[in-house]
Every structure is written in C-alpha cells, then in structure tokens.
Image (tube, rainbow, N blue to C red; front, side, top):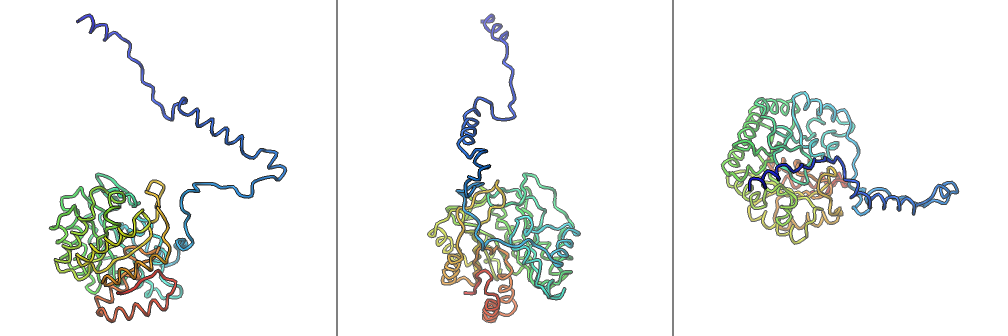
Amino acid sequence: MASLVCRRLQRPVASQVRCLATPASSGTASRGNFKQALADGPSFDDFVSGNVPERVTLGNTSAPRLPKFLKTSIPSGKNYKRLKNDLRGLGLHTVCEEARCPNIGECWGGKEGATDAENRSTATATIMLMGDTCTRGCRFCSVKTSRAPPPLDPHEPEHTAEAISRWGLGYVVLTSVDRDDLADGGAHHFAETIRKIKQKAPHILVEALTGDYAGSMEHVALVAKSGLDVYAHNVETSEEMTPFVRDRRATFRQSLAVLKHAKEQGVRITKTSIMLGVGETEDQIMRALQELRKVDVDVVTFGQYMRPTKRHMKVDRYVEPAEFERWQRTAEDMGFLYVASGPLVRSSYKAGEFFIENVLRKGEKEAKKLAAEAAALTPEAPSVSAA
C-alpha cells in the first residue's frame, strides 16, 4: 500500500495553462463561418463597379427600434447648469442623473423666457439620499451596486435641507438607494432629512420615494411619521414579472405591505409606479392595479421601460401612446385619485407633482380644475389626468 502511495505521489503534475481568450480549438468553427461570410459578400470589384447593395444593415436587427416619441433632446440651458452645479457643490446625488431619466432636461431646465425665480420654482430634481451606490441589483436600474457601499454622510440631511430651501421650490421628491448593509436600512437618515427640510422651509411639500426596508414595518412607520406629505414606493411591475425584473430581495407582496402600512400611519397620499414593456401581460397589470386599490394607493404612474445599458435586461416592446391612454382611463375608473401615463412618464414626473401639490394645498376639486387647464395648454405633454 505504501509503495502504491509513493508511486502516485511521484507522478508528474500537469501544468495549468491560463487562457485569456477562447481556446483556438473551440474558435475554429466561428472563424470559418466568418471567413465564409466574407467570401459570400460583395467583392472589391462590386464596389469599384458601383454594383453594391442598396442598404447595409448594421447592429442587432431583431431588437425593437426606439420610436420617435421616446427620443428627447440633450439637456442644456442656464437653469439646468445652475441646478447641476448646486448639487455637485453640496455633494448631493439625484436619481435623475443616476437612473438616466429622459426628462432631466425638461424638469431641470425650466421654460424659455421665464425669469430665474420662475425657473427655480418650477424645476424638479429628485434628490437621492445615502450616496449613489445601492446594495441591490435590479435588472432595470443603472444605479451602481455594491454589497458594502461607503458609509453615510452625517451632514447630508443638513446639506439637502439647505439646498432645497435655497432653490425656493414648492414641492420636492426625496428618494434613496437601498442600504441593506445598515441595521435600519437608512430609515433614520431619511426621516432626519425630511425633518430638517420642514424646519428650514415648512411650506415645502415633501414626497419620499422609499425602498422596502427589507419588510420592516417599524422602519416604514419611522419615515411615514417624519412629516412627509406623500409616501411613494414603486412596485415597478406585475407580481408575476417581479422575480425577473427586481432584485430577489424585493417582492410584490412586500411592496404592497409597505404601501398599506404607510397609509395606516396617517399618510395622506400614497403613490406607486409601474413600468410597461418588460414582458408583462394585460391581465397581470390589471391584477396589480386591483391589489394596489385594495391597500388604498392613491396615485399610480405608468411609463415605458428604457434599457439604460447593454448590461441590463432588454426591452420586450415599446408601448404605443394609445395604450398608455387606455391604462390611464382604466386606472381612473378603478378609483385612483390621480394617474400619470405616458412613454416618458417616470415616478417623479413633474406633472404628477403639480397635481399632488394642489391636492394637498387646495383640495381635490380645485386640483382637478387646475390639472385640466394645464392639460389644455400643453397638449403634447404625456397623458396625465385626475380621476
């Protein structure tokens, strides 16, 4: 037995070879196919003689092409640059930039010919708290991810409140990355920021777009009771599509529980958002809306999923504006207080904030009147309506 062990130990050990690319043996077929494709294509003589194909197709032709109604101009303008400089100067992040929102030029830029004060009062920037790195990896989101993001900035609540009070806004949206690395998910930090804003500028209405705090209702209640005016949490898609779209730690039922508990804590308006074009069916979206109404969600928005990079999930289809209008009418008929629906609508789209601000300040009846007047003046805007 001992001699057998010795013989085994004396056998030469094969050296390991590290391959930095696909081994040559497995790539032979692909190279052969490539050579054959070149041989079958137009020759040099064809190009010289002018006998060339009328159209050369490049890229992935199987993927749906971006429709014209989803194309937006590059953001620019004096107010846009000023707002961006203010944010960078205070070390603040926005979901507008991190999530590559297509409406950033419209929301930050203001209107041509308007005064500086008017532009500041109408500008909308969704501040992203707790850094720019998330602990989750949803398949649709372009925000950076890490299991151990940098520690929280203890001065962020004060800096955020200072910036917002300086801009002279009437309505502000706060959101945050998910911080599963923190014991409270960052709930105390979020709540402290809201309290600081209310101390510096009591007139400002605050919408908080939060995560699910890993299902901790205690932490949901902490934020809900911090003085905010609108509690928002996005279900993102139907229950059936959730495992394919969101991080595995996020579930549709958990999101419903968050929205329900926030309402039970006395929040006046709860809000959520749904993306279309991720592979959902009409029946799935209908069931999602029914579940949202069961927990008394007041506001729902519909928007088109846009693939931020090639590393994210593909767009299943581009939804036509007529379908967004149909979902708007459906949600209105189901009793939602307010519905914003359109290809470029996002959770914090400024038209929705306009209506909600007026609901909180002037009451539902007056807000509907103002929303109708605004829609009549801007017919090209994404479809937004009050139920």
